[in-house]
Image 1 (tube, rainbow, N blue to C red):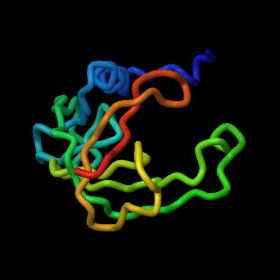
Image 2 (spheres, one colour):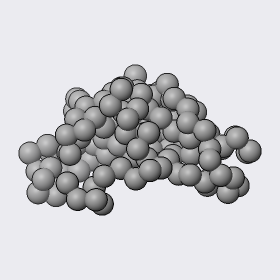
Image 3 (cartoon, rainbow, N blue to C red):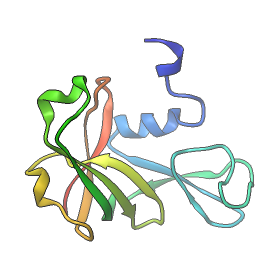
Length: 130
């Protein structure tokens, strides 16, 4: 594994949470913004050192796309659904539908997070219908 594949200091707690089955994000102590993907500065007001919080992992599909022609490393998984999910805590993240027919998910559907092994073998958040 090369250095650019390792979690950076800002995201390492996020990946440790995923390994424990928790979806972590950051919350600004100054403006209360929900911050995802983890950063050391608030993306809204620039305040340093937002605090870690645990998401319930429940949200609504904001957008979805069905991948029929994937990159070679995912060829055996097609078709699959890529989702943008608005989590109830106020942040949006991209992931995939973990199971079921890729055509079965729609914008506005409620989903919940599950953790499966990702392409690199470490636990990664995916979503299933709620």
